[in-house]
Image 1 (cartoon, helix red, strand yellow):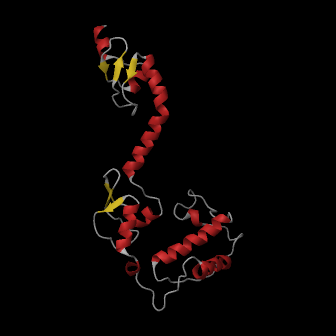
Image 2 (cartoon, helix red, strand yellow):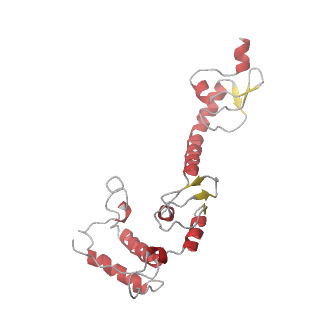
Image 3 (tube, helix red, strand yellow):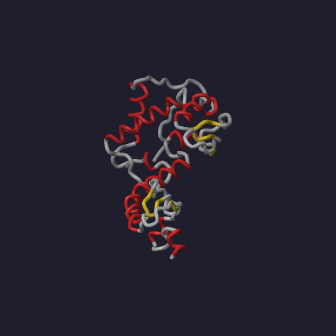
Length: 214
């Protein structure tokens, strides 16, 4: 493939808007994506077959979106400005906040550089990259872990309650994890105890009070 055309825009946001509009067209025509994440980890969702759409056809979409979109994006005259000048640091910080991050330091100078920030949901301090956050690929690690744990707990809870009741332990609080002490009331002696679900499930200790009196 030869060199494809290129165009400079006055702001990175303008170029991003046009890019996303063209990708929407390709996806709407079921031309994109072609590759999978296993084949191309970065950028796979923006691939399409050259047998089904040519570079000239894609460029025609770029031109059309540039001149006839909701906003008309005029190409920049003169030399290409540095990326650091194009990026609006204040707007970037606001976008980070809108996506759940509070920046702890000023903009690091590059959109793909790590930007120390605090998750506004759980308070965890991490180092996400602006590009990853904007593209939805880098959420808070702690929040993701908690969400996955909550999903697993919700799926396991009904069976766990049945197992505990069959072992003469009535749960007094929701199920958390298989290794978390679970506050229950023994239906034999009436005392509160905190058995471990995995132990009970595997036939281990149930009520420590009843066990000690045997």
